[in-house]
Length: 388
Image 1 (cartoon, one colour):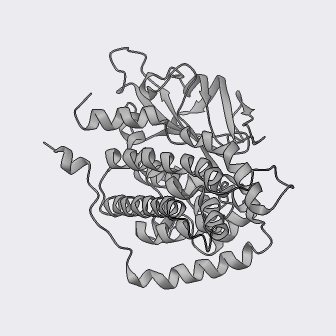
Image 2: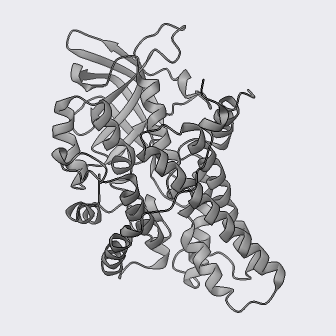
Image 3: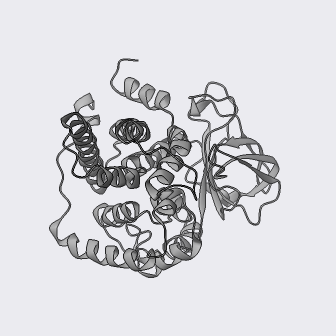
């Protein structure tokens, strides 16, 4: 039986030294491509959406890097991808178009998709030509994903779907959705009654996304309704009833990457620059604490990348990174206000630092929703450790 120490571990891991050339190549590319991007625009980081930029990354072979070469991937390790992702986040690159597809959807389809799905979809992902969204959360389900009620019923020609998803990022402009539906209504099969489906959002009728505007005026989140939606039989991903197993593997990819501690990177960098030369030991101690926290999160995240590279499924450890990373990112705007007299402003007013602070104060509360709320994460952690 697997012990808690086996499930929750962060073995030290260093990126291979030979990846420095890749890092420099990616950094030079980003310096050139983003030279006209303001620091305020960059502070939107991986939520910013630019299909042309994603296609350029695809041209360089920097999307779907871990996917098989026969489908257009590079067959690289998780470490090569980590370098590219890290550089994009640090530069504030607009990665929203390809983010979900590159991070998890391509890997999921490679593991569980049928051959037709792999041949048709994965080359689009690696080329930066496919935008994906994730259909998991639902209204009234609270923190219990397995309680979802959107039904997929078998028909003569495939599946009939009815229900609603919520907090679905980019659903209003995505090409595809990978959704988790209840394929067996038996109440005794809470987890075993779930299955995953691949949905072509551009060709499938009966699906209506409604954008949810956040405090900053952004419209990335959506509520998505399914009314008598007909899916073909081969829309099923993997085996019917195996959706819960598949989705937990997918969430390990979603919750452990560098985006869990670099979303507010531009604010931290600008804050350090403004406080340069400060001799106040209390301020220096607080900045040092944040830098140490970020360094620790990177070490933990790299450890999980190593486990994923080894074919493991570090779901519990990934939940810890997600929870701690969210705390770190949501703490930064308040700390910035405490340490610097410059007030937050709206975009177009004040110096760039003030605009970045104003932007992140508004959007940081949404970080809790991305990949699961703190309550969800702590419940998973407690259960995994046997204390719940």
